[in-house]
Image 1 (tube, rainbow, N blue to C red):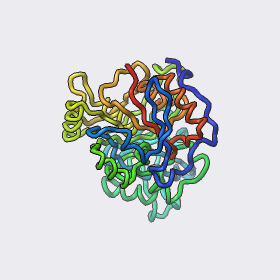
Image 2: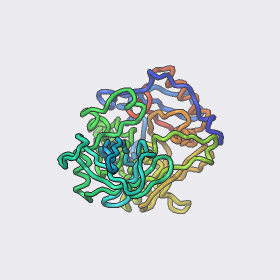
Image 3: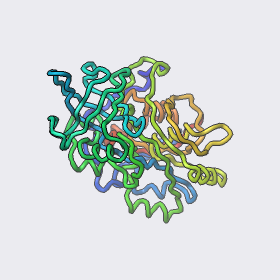
Image 4: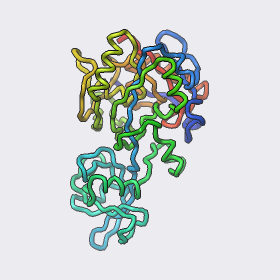
Length: 358
């Protein structure tokens, strides 16, 4: 499909730089195909669902994956910024580096707050491989939990570029850019629909008879990359690692068997469920890397409802929601959201999309 079909105009002032307080006070746009959009509040979610429905959350935890360091090659020194996006093994990460043209395989980079030759507060890595579009593989001198501790010490929360371009990351982001149920470390971007949930909302959902289940997809920095191709067939997705446990799969099969609905909280949960699904087994135990790219015409096997924030024009995520609820429906919904001053993107408001006919 033509990428320009997914374009729309978004006023700059609609981009949220901080989340709503409290989190569940954010606006919630309810979108049912064939009906006018409905303006609600996230705290009203229990009343919009039915007893027996099940929410599926992504429990990945954001790590401080934004690194700044110095590449030293003899007497030549260059500053390098790197955003980790997928763990390869205990000591290696794939990353997007800037400026990547200053790096060659074998280069040494010292990351850390001070960017000097003092070992304290620094983390050293070797460029093990170079890929396309600024991607490199970094092999760190530390491994396993020691590497994780060092990243927490020297790294920064990798705010999306549409926020980072307007203000610096601060200590508050370490809490704001994390769901209350984050558990499995490895993401470099938050599953942002989940940022709206609070302990009080969880309690209200439980009292309403709505189940909670968890999957894990470690969201990579590739989620922020623009679609530069003119046709969706020419766009390449970056891989992300995910897992659906046997326990979660069995629970979701039971929900479907009794006729209740599956609600994916976030596009990451939905992409993982669809990656694991087969025609014969919609919900099954699964672990691996997914590069799934969902565009209109895709036949969904899993979720009946999708809760998701508002996405960038021409992005793979706007393509996904257009596949889920219909391209015309989503253009109309986004036009309504802009007119009603909804807040967009990671720290913005959210929507509850009912699946259209596929």
